Length: 308
Image 1 (cartoon, rainbow, N blue to C red):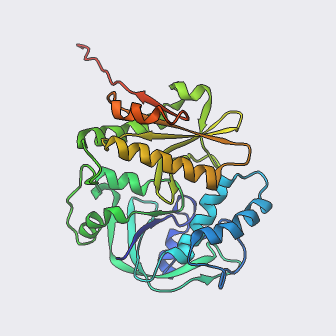
Image 2: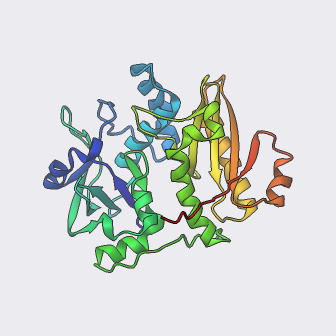
């Protein structure tokens, strides 16, 4: 099955027009060497070689930032296959859509030097026509994002059929209304982090002023929020239940914690987790008795109508 990717063509799509005119997509991240013959089939192998190189050139960066950078370079250069579909924002509310039709090529001295040729379709997709869920996926941090989970909606939009999907049809979702509400809660937490209890000890992970800790990609999905303690000694994974089955949520956060421990944490960093849900959940509480590094939180929503 072909895959679908959103690719940012430079910061704030600054190179979009050149890429569309030149029929290619590309990435940079300061890895200035030809990767021909150096792109293994498995991203972990690439990361093992190039993360140390990336960090050696940038001593102020962390493994979290290096993983994003090297992951984007490998995905754009190797992970995306011929005939996969790419959607690229032009900076003006439109996404250009195309099919990848070439293998990796290096353009030394050029912008976005790690390139793939693309045949752009005649159709563009307007962000305004997308469902809220797809817009959120398209806005995920990072240069390259796999959006294959929304392929049906994307194909409809390419065909000119606008049928927004309001909530996820993920089979693990038990309560679609909670799923929709907690997607908004994620944005609320990001925007109001300094007012939460977490902010006393943790900051959402940033890199170059961007909240890359929101929807941080892993090999088993995206972490809702990745935070780091103010003393830099603890990484915190915040996962919203989003209407999913309790066992699914517990299993997911454990997988995320394992990934962060093995792939991102420095030698002296610990990893903790938080699950947030709308209602109390005895099944989650039972499971977490055996996992002291994960806390469980409930949230409440209240509002008032004031007569004018």
